[in-house]
Amino acid sequence: MSVAKEFEAANANYVASFTKGDLQLPPQRKVAVVACMDARLDPARALGLEEGDAHVIRNAGGRVSDALRSIIISQQLLGTREIVIVHHTNCGMLTFTDDVLRNKVRDELHQNVDHIAFLPFNDLEKSVQEDVKLLKESPLVLDVPVTGYVYEVETGKIVKIDSQ
Image (cartoon, rainbow, N blue to C red):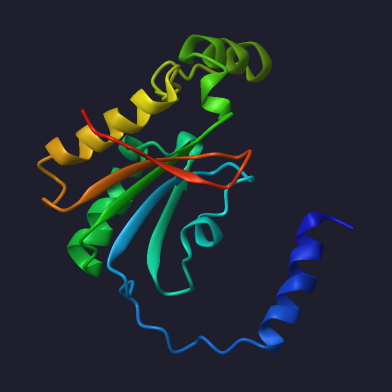
């Protein structure tokens, strides 16, 4: 059975007891969370979120430059007034460089992706600090609280990272 078929079966069970169809469009806690897409990180569980609480924007590495479009929409149209960034230990983004991935794509897919910044990093805390700084300095982002964390995949704990 394909994973999609498994999802369809799971969704049928979910629908049978679904009671949250009346949630409002804007997130109730007025927060946007930018987190890595890593399967070991469940932002809702780690941060105590329920459906309707927050916008959770996920991408490789939890990089805010990649999430900027969603952050602008979240703030300007849906009223979020705080941003939380969550990177994590043992992240795949620590394991390569743009050149390594570009060469892999070129060799295996015969495509040129030199125009894509894959946004890897080699220092976990620094990546969080850079992302906090980027949001605080961006003229496209409202002046709201921005907090950065590292999620420890080994323990489930979030560790606040002080901005520079």
